[in-house]
Length: 503
Ligand code: NAD
Image (cartoon, rainbow, N blue to C red; front, side, top):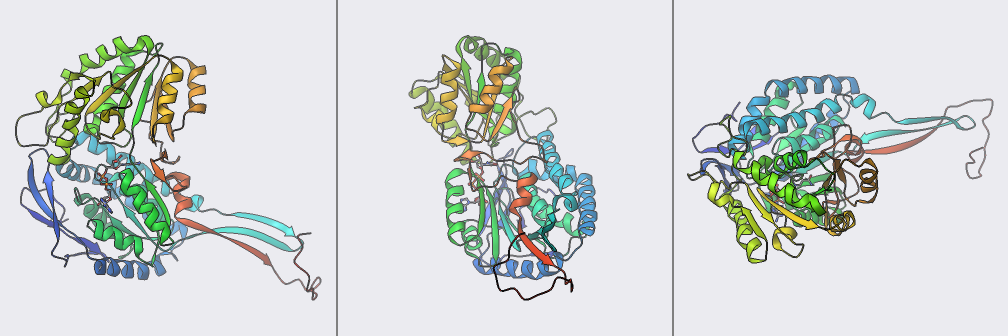
């Protein structure tokens, strides 16, 4: 394995056709250990010619891979599952080293990705078509699902193992060949993934990794031999990727950013809601697309809730993700930490109350740390409310009624996740009916659907018409073919120039 964690500066190169391929562009990006604030590696940035090469190799591999029987593919995916299970800690350590998330959280990420691999072990059932016998006299009609060809995935920094698994596992199980362009900020997990897939027995060329920036992304979006692209990242780039890819004739799904609200009604269990707000607001340093960013405190819930959240904050242990006592790690880069910290200036300047200032509680040293931060009395016009902060800054918006809370959520341009905390089943049911958000939690703060449902937001959180993984993932990576079939029956055979009738 060449993806071991070391403190030396190491080069992370592409993976094409089952082997490491050193980049030839001369352009590279830095990779950091965010807990130490030190550069630990360099990653190659691909040229369009390198993308061409990866796609040509994937195209050649696809021709054979699509002929593998479903049972052989299922056998292989069971082996892939076992191998990733065996190496879950190796993957998690790479995530902690480059992303900064604490090891327990990194293990959780790998676990949620493994569940998608487990789901696609059932690929023979998932690809079942339909059959109508005797649709017309002597004629049967059936549909079959076929792979698209070479498909690509472009992924964000915040889940460097799991989000690629959401894509490559269903894509490959469906019979496609795959080209991954992971985030340049934490690229090593994708190389360990490639090595494990090869070791499990996946034929060379079916899974390829190309590192890079906009140059690589644009080459993927314009490549004539890439049939479909899945993207996960921020909303402006998701919109660009979706529009560019669809214009080039590709099937596209592009998942974007988020601003997730947690509505707390006065009848909610305040301690449970406060535990949930702290866990979902600061877990992974708030760098989750399903993190809670805004607590919407309704009526009398506000004072006790803010007090209960505030009480919990000094107990959150912030530190190096490899220290088992740490509950929250650093942010991914220094620039991102500084951007997140800027909301602790702009929030109060625009009228919010700074209840907890993470700049004062960040651990010493060069790491990209910011402590847990809380802004109260936030209003919808403030930057802290309008922007996706993507860091450990939780905002509290106080509203007078359930209706006001619902309106706030529905008027927000994002629609990824939302949570409602209440003891009233009737209100919860009405909320699930009314709310314009793709993933809803009832007393559950981070409602990431299990692997046999599909993941995706609404509005500016997703461009395209298919959610990711689960049944919609299988739909995305296949196309159906309808066959109308008649076998010769000499008894009924005659010449008939009329339009085929169904009776
Ligand atoms: P990002 O949009 O900066 O980068 C995502 C990918 O796009 C990376 O591979 C990157 O190299 C590439 N990219 C960046 N700039 C580009 C450009 N100008 N042109 C073409 N490609 C470009 O996102 P990020 O900072 O890596 O990840 C965090 C974002 O991802 C947050 O907004 C978060 O909400 C979102 N996210 C969404 C989901 C979801 O399921 N909706 C899941 C995880 C993360």
